[in-house]
Length: 463
Image (cartoon, rainbow, N blue to C red; front, side):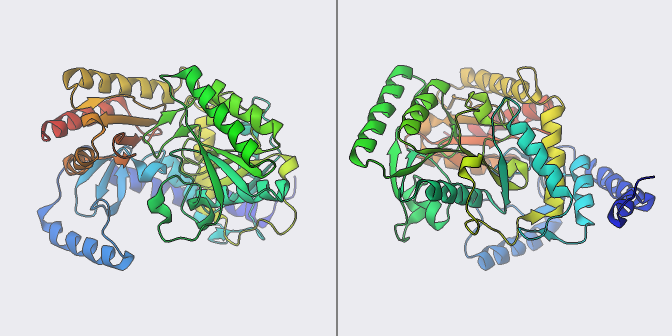
């Protein structure tokens, strides 16, 4: 009989499994009562408004939506603390991939919650971390990607910061960065300089020199490639040897799901490699949302990318990188990387998506997108002046309303919320879009049908 640690025998204790099953069964029982969209309970309205007012005041500003969850839901549906029920089609801007109160996710979280510490960190990791690292790196390398290492961190923006630090250290003294127009990488001091939205850095000092490249235009394939190549060559001629990294979103979420193309990205990568510039792919929003686990795999860029940032759907956040970008000691560290609950939930979710029918042409992600898109297309034919595509990709679905009018699109999102569906705004005039990040692990075609009906109803309420 092989020797076991006390920790192993603890997790094998039958009482642990019995207690976990009791908790999961209790969640299922109460969650099953949530079956459809419903308005707020009048008896809870006053106390709910007090919570909203106090919470908004404490955090220094009004909430975007009057949303405070009760702590339970059922797949694509979520209950708020006022007793109302809504379809969650934005999932915390893309965090709740398996929706609400998912039994498998809860069971994994319980495993993490009963470990000896709340948080893992750079100095101390539990046995669940090596298991998760192996899963992610194996998946990143399944097509011969050649990635050697991963560093786990507390947020997507810190994954981006760490990628930049590794690129800058490798390319020292190069100090400039390339990025796409309309990109979003985060809001820390350094990364806010890259995010192409001036309000996100209003009042902040300059931290990085960033030059922007035009993003891909599907209506002008060859022209897009020529424009970006010409701009790149202009940048390298003007600032020879000064660029450390090219930061690439392969699908731009902030602007409402602008989708790139392999030929476009390869034209950029080829020139960057010739000029000794590291290629960083930011997948904090796209990870697990295309029919491949990583968007760089969808675009067949596996062997050409140096560093990849993941987050949101992954529950933990991380930078995946090659050995030639391995940082020298002291450059990156983190007291907190993530909680035991998040690490265990991450393994469960990523393993499910990678191995249980979500990926590929016949996988749930692609089938769900096609079904949702077809229903939006039908609605567009009925209301051509109010709704039109593009519809995005995979679990990322976007629509243009009222020819991209910002005010009307924003009015729509609030009315849609009142009517029972959570969405979010993206972009701005004249390219405003309303977007969804659907709970792919929970969503059904019936959910989509119900949401389409609510969208149509809401559009009818706006002139």
